[in-house]
Structure formats: structure tokens, C-alpha cells
Image 1 (cartoon, rainbow, N blue to C red):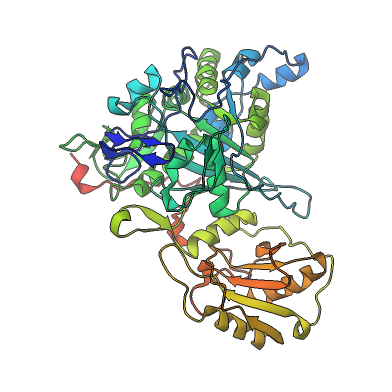
Image 2 (tube, rainbow, N blue to C red):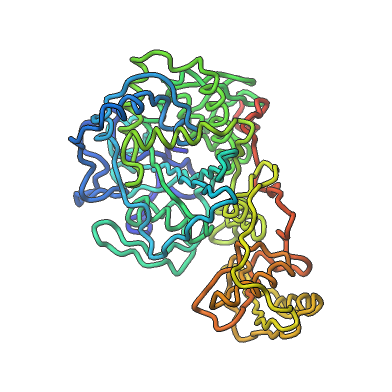
Length: 561
């Protein structure tokens, strides 16, 4: 998560001069949304008096009382907000309901123009839940400035330096988490801030953590949807002080390193984390150091830090599930104050009761069915050396599995594909136009791909195949579009013949007949890379199971003592 070096500012999506790039690989990321743990004072203000990453209206406080019966149920909510987010625990303790509701800041869910697709229910009529966890690097409160350091960065436009998507399966049997490295380069969608300011879609690759400076967390949500096609139901954004308070309340989380580590270089880089080889129970500022450490883990990049965060979260959940922590009501009260005061959420999660209900859903997942992963990626070259890009094929496979509610732990999904209302015509009568959409920002179209896929359809018996050689607009994932309901069955027949998931068959007014766009996820000849029956999480995602107590971070040899 956070870091401490000097970095240049990002203002309205553009970088200003001076200092080291906050979002780059040369320094620690910073993680916080402004606000001290006490709940007093101004929050997240820019020099012009407007909140960045929060609506102009501020957070306000509710004076409406909840029904007494509902209150008692809600007052049983316990555990840190991070635990609620990641795998909710619940427990005992009495909270000041109205006061805590007032602590929680609220924002719009999405600031993008695109309407997110609805969830498809499984055979039992259940739908999944997707929560985006955001860590802002804002340092605009005394508490967070004390923890964050780097005075040159105080009051600047924040960056979304931690981004994790939590996918709770429709049947609540499993939980999948995808981290996106903050150094990921991608296109930003158009975002309209709550105050009406418009941030145009980027025409160049932009680092993903800049999304927060384009109107607030709703733009981070829009950016995720643009890249992944995954519907996001809620977001939650937290800060430095909340992490420290919650770590203290938990009472210690065991973490492991394979050698002595001191995250501090001669020129002052590093989080300051100092641990002996083996397993240590960490809390408070030491826990924050662990979550922020970049220099000292593996190759000193954000990828190693993501693995350390996954190890910490899994371990924290195991500790909370043991039921031996958080037994002191006074500690619970302090935790609730710090946690809600550290939170910014979408307006659909604007009360403690809603957070409690969400926690109850997460509690249904056993730790052995929790899978942490990192978006598969490749390093850029030239001016973007050190930044990362989604890895063609692997990244899309991971996103597809989440979209289709396929567990990342390899256990079979019970979900059944929907049958089309209109059945398929004989394949020999189905007309399909195939085009080459394999181009990416870094690569041109792969030669001959449309013709090769057209040949596969002909071999499968399709008799009316044509190649649209005039359209080579790139698409991230292969898609089959159809214009009207009477062609849905025909379009699905094309998908089944090629092994393309039915989730990638979509109705569109942009086509007049069935159109197959061979995407960047299918640049190589042969069968579609995520064909039917291939439900394996890519090795490049670095999956970590929630029950893995032997996980241990590899220490960079230059940071041992």
C-alpha cells in the first residue's frame, strides 16, 4: 500500500513537474484517504476548497433514528472495516449507530458514461457481489501525514494506489480477489465529477492509479469496468489511520519472511519495516509498514507488495475466524470509531446496517474457498519501462472467470448457461462476418487471424462465412455480436463451435448480422485459449489460498541485515 518518497503531483489527470513520479516504480506508493481517526477537522480538501475523491457536499451526519429492533441486530456488528470488506467476521459489541453512520462518507458509485451490465442469476436465482476496495494515497489530515511522511506531497491530488476487486460468488460458496498493480497502464474512460467537471477519455495510456484524481472513486470504478467488463456493485475506500487502528484492535497478525528484512536503503527509500526471519505477529504501524513495503520484497516492485498484502489479509481473516480476538467491548468501540471514520463508500453502502449485512454475506465463505490473485501482467518497454500492462490472454481469462462466476480455486462452478429464446438455425445456413480485432496499443493486428478463424467455422460446417478486412479496430477480448433476439441462438451456435464462452455473445445495435471480432486474447492460431472446460486460473495470477499458513515472503538480498 503506502510509501514515502517525494513524488510529482497528478492534477486533473496530468502530471506536474518536480520530484519523483508517485505512480512509478521508483518509489513507495502512498495509501490513504484524508481524515484523522478522531473524526474531527477538515477532510480531503484541495487548495481550491473542493474535496478530491469526495463529493463537494461533504459527508454530513444523519439525525434519523433506526427502528429499535433493527438497531439491536446492527449493534452486534464487529471486527474491522477491513475485515468486513475482505471477509467480514461479525461478533459482539455495541456501536453508536447514528454517530457511526455520520462518520461514513458517501460518493457516487460510478462517474463513467457506460451503464454497467446487470448480473445474470445462476440456476438458483442467486447473483454474485463485486466490491472494489480502494486505497487512496491522500495525505491531508494530521493523522495520515504523520503516518505517511513526504511533506512535499501533502494536500495534492490523491492516487488510487491500492485497487482490489472482491468477487463473492452467487451461491456464497467462494471468494475471489484480484489486485491490479498501481503501475498498470491503460486507457481512462470519460468521467464526470460530482461537481460537474468533465474529464475526457484519455487518448494515451495512463497509469491506473490516476483514476482517483478524475472526480473521485467513481472514476476508479468506471476504469475497472472499462477494462474488465465486470459489473461492480459497491466500492469502499480507506486510509492510513484506519489501517493502524484496525491492526491494533485485531491484536496482531502473523506474517512470514524467508530472511531478516529491513526496508530502508542508503538513499532513504523503503517503508522502514524491520523483521527477523520467520513468523512475526505484527500490528499497528508495523502492520502498516508491511502493507506499504515495496523495497525489500522480491524484485522491489508493486507486484511483490501485492503478494505481501494478500498474505496479510489471508492471515488476518484466519485470526478473526478463530474468535479469540476482539473480545473487549471498549476496543470494539474504538475500532468502530476509527473504521467508520476512515471509510468512503458508495451511496448503496451508506449505513452501518448495510455494512453489517454485507459482512454477513462474506461470513458464509470458508477460508479454504478464498483465493487471492494479481492481474496477470507484462512489463512495458521504452518510456513505460517499469510499468506493466495486462497480459493478453491470461488477464482476460481471469476477468472472464469472475464475470462468469467461475471459482478461482479450481472447484467446479454450478452455474448453467442461459438457453436462447430462439433456437439456432442449421449451421450451414448461419451467416457470419469475421474480422481481425487483435490489435493492441503496443501491437498491430496479428496477420491472417480473421481468415484462420473463418476456416475453423467452415470446418465446423458453417457455410455462409465472410471476412471483413476493412475493420481492424482492436478489441481486448473476442466477441460475437448479434442485432436481434431471433439471431441469439445462431450467435451462440458460433460461440459453441469455437469454444468461446457464452458470456462473450452479446446483443448490439452496432451490427446488422452476426459479427465475430477475433480479439487480442486470440492472437495465436489454434483453439480459443479459454475454450469450454478450461476453468483454470492462470499461473501468472499468483493465486494464494486463504488456508495457506505456510506462505512466506521472499526478501530481496539487498535489504537483509
